[in-house]
Image 1 (cartoon, rainbow, N blue to C red):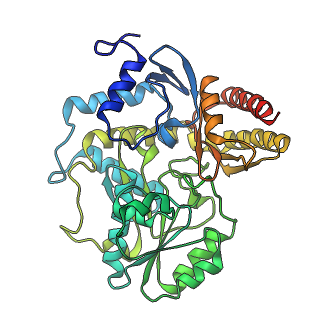
Image 2: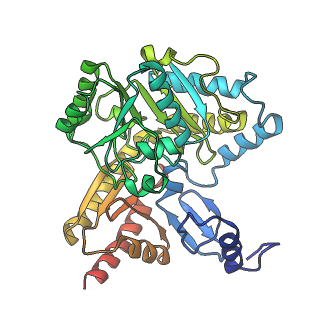
Image 3: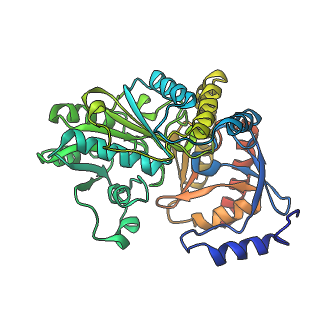
Length: 400
């Protein structure tokens, strides 16, 4: 291992644990470099990455074009604040609106910030109808407002009292949503088109269109959290396009910068004009460096047809997982390259994640014991088959 400061992997882990607040349950690996779908640790071991920084590294690791775009921008301007205009920001704004069908946007630094912007825009537009309905098992961020919007008490309970104005209904339950919208103080509905952290929960094909119809009837804004589902992950630029629904507001982050932190809130119609100067802002949001990265990611996404590739590869991947599911009496779920394998009670997802890492594959367990697969959009059949074969071997061993 080559490192001027730390003698080995243990020293890096020990130094991090000594300094960092105790909020992460990390795996005992120090990653040092990556190329495509592969990453290497400080001891030289190679892994195939099926987590991609939690759906972030959509172009894979070590993309030379992305590195060049970042380096070129860094030589000119990294940051100037939104007191001034910059060309990278103008280009990104123009491209995102052209590709998305929205009217206005706000650029920020993360998914949570994008959701915060959406919440504030909805409240600014709806005024006294300040309440927002979200879904149980959802995940929208770690700020006080976004973790209150999140429909999982394990995230929000330690931070009570929480901001008022949020209620949660079961996902995929139209009757519950209809009942929630009888409250005249509700101004918006906030949903993930597919729940990610909650365990790859997909809606019935008619659920989101029906929710959109309800929102129109009640004059309630529909907000889609596309932080994990967007940027081509489901085989469409946005997951809501899979279901034929256009929301009033959508939020992006994760894959937008290919690894460089950036988020976006996009709005259309009357609500897009609700903000006035001073209503919202960000020091770093939309900085030239992050925008240059996002511009390259978007160009690559469309020029190399990665969205179509994700759709085709996702069909292959899902069929391979369904084969495993049938063999071991499990359930394969998901769309595109946002897939899950529900383990039920017979397998420990955490143990499987550890054992797969030992075999050279990085995966993740989310929700109610569901293995989550969100690899780079560049992943190929060879990597999928190798991972699935290794997982099958483990499942067979664990089942005996």
